[in-house]
Length: 213
Image (cartoon, rainbow, N blue to C red; front, top):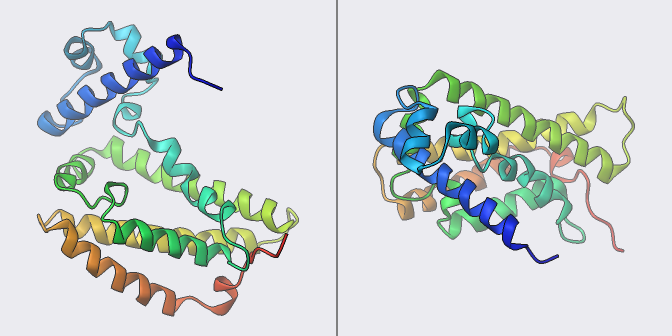
């Protein structure tokens, strides 16, 4: 369904507020900047900011829902004959090879990571997002395999897949904070993904293989 004018304006307003807030956070620090500061810079009321973002952390992690859904989306979109873990490895390689900003492979990512590191509320929210990612993936794996509620395997496999994803992002963040070139880091991350795949057991690599339709 086509987006209506009202919905488009709301989306654009939300994005503008978030972009302005992120700029303030990166320049002055997350803890220092207040919601009132964001409202003033965006030329809106404090209530308007809260209408779009219930918590200050939501302004910083404004795209968190896409992150929470990402692994599940990749698993649901896996190819015929492809397992859940291999689908995630394939997608991560594609994003890394493309030097995608979604992987943190972008100039200025070091400022983003430092902002998180200096703000305990952001570190706490990031941990919460990571838990949501794993819980969401476990639910997807149960649905995709028909596993029962008492079957521990979807949860265990979800943990392994989240380890793959998390390990790559931690490594990217660590290298980008050093001010390194995204293309160089990309090449190193492709090698890391090969190393990660070698460490995974066949049980993990062959779980939830999509059969022929």
